[in-house]
Length: 102
Image 1 (cartoon, rainbow, N blue to C red):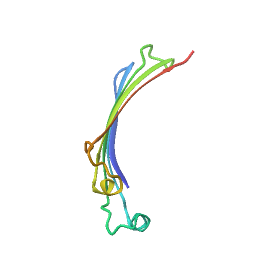
Image 2: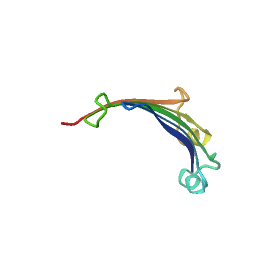
Image 3: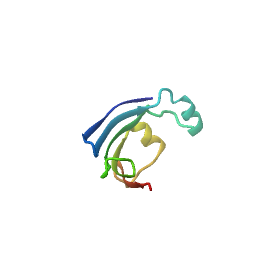
Image 4: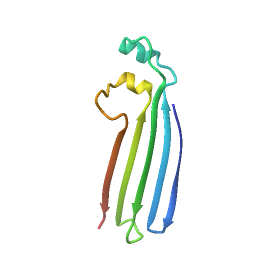
């Protein structure tokens, strides 16, 4: 299940900022318990937060630059399924891409 909120903000005609935050959880963990042969798996998967900046220097779609960052803070259910011993508790993703059209 997913519960989230986000927004797109047009700062200028050339610049847009998008944000979102989502919380994820399992509705029912019985099938995962059976597959993993575990007695108990918590329902919380975790929380994801992201922000992206989209820049169109010519104000049209010929050149689109995008930078984004996301952080995933795992819940107990995620921790039971994926061992991250010796690692930071949060997962971070940073992305940059460019679309050039002629």
